Length: 330
Ligand code: DGJ
Image (cartoon, rainbow, N blue to C red; front, top):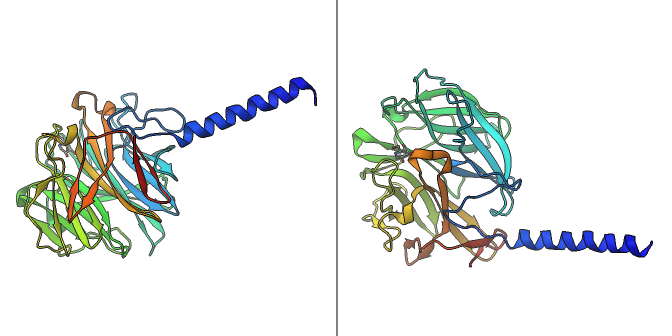
């Protein structure tokens, strides 16, 4: 090899090392524009996470203004480390399947895996412009990343439904969380083995009118979380705990007592990461921008879980070692 070609090899090696360092040093910056591995802005609002085959899949609504305004889109991203997210494309594209008219809504998609059928089942809140339809929609796919095919929409337990949330317990049992305006509270209901039906009776009714419902089971306690009703405006999100899913639940307390509005965010999902050294619970929230929903940001931040309580501290850049579960705050 000539001196010149050796120099070329060293340049390539140096660039590779630099790239690896940059990758290893990535931080999650709550509220900042978040890019996927191709450098494109992540569009996955009101989202949820499915952990399947050692990979995390993040599903959420894609609100890119360049998309067909008559359709609704759910985009999927995947990650092995929770830091770098690869765009897997539109998992679902729907053209008003229930004829709900202009400004119809598809919000808060959540995906479950059914070990019984080996299929993936997506739940979503479907509504008309005035939120009167109040149904949950169900779509199915053979592949985790889709395409998902719309099956039907219905009112679980015969009840009008608004925000939905997702919970899968340590025993693999899957639950749908949904807010129901008329009842003044929200429900936690078991899903059937094929994940296509919401089973009666509900496992829990929490008599608190809360949206953005989320749940996590952490060290023997269930933590249920939600936000108050103020449209897209953020408010102080609250949580309660119980030893059993059916309750009794404690009184609700604020998750971020240091902030009037949960640092400008609304809960959408609680992600439990079981590492070899620690179990970490990550708060996933949306910072909605109602006039430009596509530009809404994500506030993801590990929660401090202590003495049967949870605390969302002032957001700062952080990273997680998904293998050990250990979090570092910048
Ligand atoms: C609050 C809900 O949490 C959101 O999903 C959305 O439906 C807005 N309300 C609409 O105002």
